Amino acid sequence: MIEEARWSGIGLEALCGPAGKAAMAVSGREVAGFEIALLAADDARVAQLNQDFRGRPSPTNVLSWPALEHPPQMGDTQGVELGDIAIAYETCVKEALEKAVSVQDHVTHLLIHGILHLLGYDHISDAEAEIMEALEIKALAKLGIDNPY
Image (cartoon, rainbow, N blue to C red):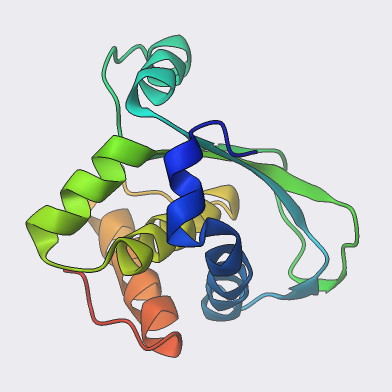
């Protein structure tokens, strides 16, 4: 759902499929058909969601809510809800400018990051962060996008 009209200008819909396929591939899953609800919002909306769900009253680039405790590793999962992702327009654009990368490449990275969260990956500990970052780097490389770290 595109709630913030400025998202329409970056081709968000075209980024979702490749990001999802790359995230699935690097996670070792051979699945097809998952559904993910994506909310493309502004910073104010994401800040409210961040407050409501994480107790942090500020915007962040991406939030995710897994729907499954243990997503399947193989098979056709047509129509199975993997979870929800919300991304914040102003934060994403600002970060892309700071990193001197295209908004599309940065948003693709954030979509992959959010999808990996839906698949059960996290970055609470340093070890978990290393695993997740390595997967993100591999997924982005599959799409021809340079290492963001």
